[in-house]
Length: 187
Image (cartoon, rainbow, N blue to C red; front, side):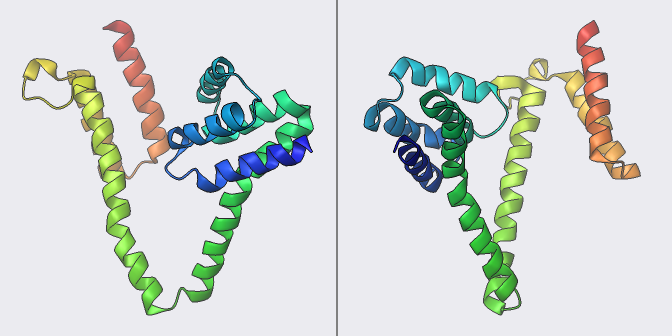
């Protein structure tokens, strides 16, 4: 019975966790602290800390942690499957619909409409990272003293290498990490 409860609780979390890991926290808290007293609020706080420190999505890490705590390894497996299953089903259905109807004008129109949105999201994330690297947490300012010049030069060189020689981004990232580490080690 406990395995079924774990599965159903984390299935609901997986189904309604729209907006990413941080948006899922109230759902997880409701299921594991309020509805089923599997964890205390203090233990839930520790759960979030552990889920943040370990690689992977928060909801899946939380499912594994709660499952193993409540019902051992079978509980971890059942809770994790419950959390992942809704996304797998939804993505599989969308993939099937796409491959079946990708030639339709309506589908092509929807995809063409989504492209600028995706580009805008990627550009926004890139601009946020650029601003953080160059000006820090204070954000963009016209004050030249607030600019992190080593980061700006490293960005310009990496951008130039990517555009001029079409080098693999992985090598540019690794090289930037090594050079940046060396610069900040000696500054």
